Amino acid sequence: MQRRPHGRGYRSRQRIGPNEWAVRARVERFVEPSLLLLLKERPRHGYELIELLPGLAGGERVDVGNLYRFLRALEGDGIVESEWHGDLPGPAKRTYRLTETGEHLLDQWADALRRSREEVSAFLERYEGGE
Amino acid sequence: MQRRPHGRGYRSRQRIGPNEWAVRARVERFVEPSLLLLLKERPRHGYELIELLPGLAGGERVDVGNLYRFLRALEGDGIVESEWHGDLPGPAKRTYRLTETGEHLLDQWADALRRSREEVSAFLERYEGGE
DNA sequence: GACACTTATATGTATTTAACATATGTTTCG
DNA sequence: CGAAACATATGTTAAATACATATAAGTGTC
Image 1: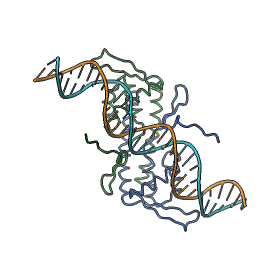
Image 2: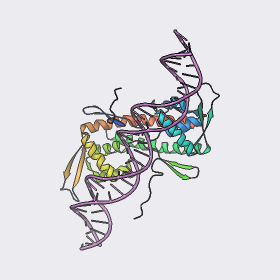
Image 3: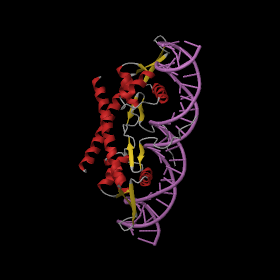
Image 4: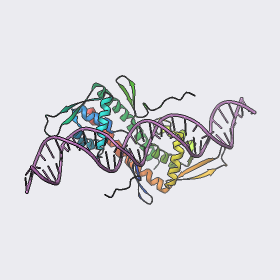
């Protein structure tokens, strides 16, 4: 099986021509607040989150493997709690719900995101001013 | 010399209490557009950029070592160009200026940052709606 | 009931980005 | 002179993310 060699254009900045670059501006670890928000709305299982996350993160699909690891790490930190549900239709699912700590963390994220948005706005104003 | 063990609270999320977390929301590689903007305004040398960057990146000081590496990487990609200036007062400085490619890249960054800001706004609206 | 397909969760590993540490030389100023 | 500030640079580790692959149960279909 032909394996695409990886290593270049691996992430945020990518060459698309001799003097052309494409960039993606993303908030670091944005999946975390996204997960928390989705779980605050109601308990959900991993696969459901995978389908819903692109709606919050600019259409970008998240890495499946990392998501499950992420969820268990959050559980380890007491931010979410999970339970197996074998009764629901389909394969057994692990349903996650947000803890009180998790809700508080989401609030922190919201504050941080507002501050980040301010920074970006200040940047853009300065940029537009000099055009 | 006592070396502080590093590894925990290393980046965006940090435990500050039993059920308390502090978070920082940052745009990935935000130093890049910041550098480009500062260099678009006028050519500058590395040390000057170090002093000016916190004004764009929420007061956070950037890592000195990484910055110089960053600048040379940008030069390798044709985004900036540099020249030694031994004539100016103080130690010899390498003065960087933005190339045309760099200006175009900055425009790309501005677009990307506007999109990112939209995402964050959408997130916050959804968050505030459910409070 | 064999088979492909979807749903669901999980681990392995490489790469990129950022943090932390340290080295080296020059200039300024008391 | 010696300390502090100016200026650039390399080495190394940890965190975040991308990419690859494994495993198993349920669903529909011929």
